[in-house]
Image (cartoon, rainbow, N blue to C red; front, side, top):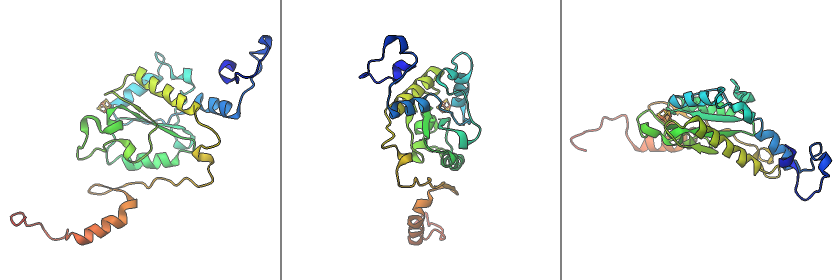
Length: 215
Ligand code: SF4
């Protein structure tokens, strides 16, 4: 463990190398976070079965300190979006994301979560969860294997290793605004576009039936 933590410029006598670490705040802070990522426990479709396999004994996510899946967003660091994101489900996903405390990460697992997958542009499917929440790692596949998910999680750890306490967003002075929860009506509506939609609806006489022959 101390091999990874030690800053190379300091010479530590060999007999105490396993007891002492001379390191930086960033390294130890990132090491603590990357070694105890707790994913939020939820799954959306077939990809979730592969995610569940990844937690079982054959692949053993506990090796990465990630086995403590939390059933509440208040205690989770990582949202693994594993499966098809439907328009009915995205308001709940955004709400869960908002309820997760910082620092938090999102991994899009599989073709559906990354871009809509085989259901892309279907009437009820969102073309990728990144249309609504920021995604840190994409894992391709339909479904990705547990090995692929593990690879994605290792990439997330590498990303965490490169972060610095000096410029991470959760220590910035500006407050982090929650993402507006989309509203599901005849289609999804982003509350940030409310004024624009109202202005357009006044221009279009939507209450009058369209004359198909004249059109
Ligand atoms: Fe199912 Fe494939 Fe979509 Fe995963 S990417 S949820 S396996 S259809």
